[in-house]
Image (cartoon, rainbow, N blue to C red):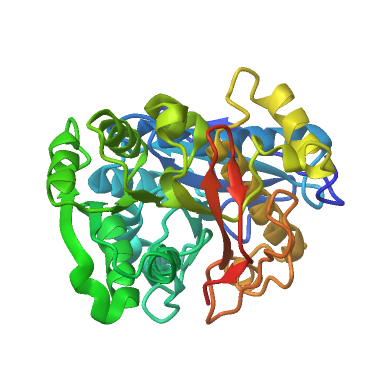
Length: 401
């Protein structure tokens, strides 16, 4: 691997019974002369357990770094605990990570509701909560959430990109929207409506679903009955696949826009049916392993080598693996920039002062630049259309600032 000039290390701990002791004399919890301890909650069970692949990719990347020798002489230990995508469980597991496992910081906790649930707790203890897996725009609000930062482009700004494209290409569209009934879905819907402006009345049908619902079939049937010719799907993976498959099977063929959180070929489009997914539009900010454009790309070769050695048997085309791999590289960069000052204060300072970082698997021209006021790592995207085999990029890189 050629990304970092220094090697790093880590392991994944999933055992609920495991207890870690704080190193004697450590100035900061989770830091010793040979270790940096990071915590995380992830959905390894429950209604969105497919997203547990993020945590597996993080663990694999840190294991690779472990084999290579460490960040500035220290290994990184990732303790990743299952919260089943349940906010009360998230609170319980974060308390364990902080009070028993003595982690330095949290990294890529999954979910808007889950991260929202822990804000009071981490705020009181000033625990960095870095690069959360949530596109909610609120993670860019330094005043309200001083110890949390985002990683992927926000749901609102991504939804605005789709609204702009609809207005430019189908100004008289009749729009249907399916959204998850939580902060994730509502945040994206708000941005979408705001961008439509006085055309918001062209949303002729909008329905929500709960993550515990068995299907979204009835919503899709209603959208066809409303004679909608554009469909915006603000969904997680299971429901995105159901919606694509059901729309095709009932003969409803609108122009479809799919939120990037659910735009995985391996986890969504293949289960839905590749032939049923043709011409769906989404956005991209990371390289797609299914795209022949990157076949000879050195960064893609490194990624595939990593997958073969550290995640054997996993789907190399699953965008969650690219996401987790790239997010782990971002944290490694921040830890490296901290040098020997691994205080929580300096960790937050470095996480919010990244300048011009081009991740190997980020699309060309999509750089990470953070400031104390602009705390979301990735803020640019490019439109992409699925051709039945891979996502094909089109148009220019669009800044979501």
